[in-house]
Image 1 (cartoon, rainbow, N blue to C red):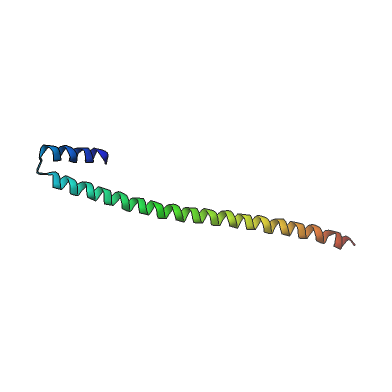
Image 2 (image 1 turned 90 degrees about the vertical axis):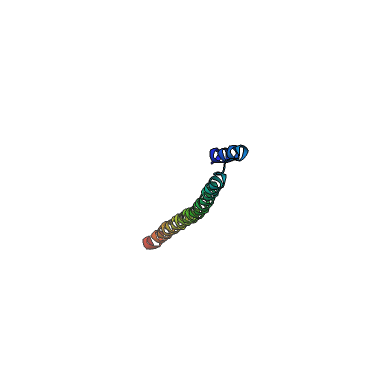
Amino acid sequence: MSGEVSNVHARLDSGDSGVQDAITFVQAQMATLFQEQEQLSISLANTREELYSLLTMNEDMASSDSINTLLQQLEQPQRAS
């Protein structure tokens, strides 16, 4: 991208008549980059949400497993009585 901008500056300095086409091209590239950046941002946010959801789900499952194990241990002495 910076190479394209340098080329535009060089063409502007030389009075090249194709500068408008180059400017339009660079603007299109910039628009595409901004769109891709937005899409990446959304994908990253979605991935973070999924990861957080998985982490908290695993945390809940671990807690449930721990509680079930504890309940089983508490029930064992009562059965022996």
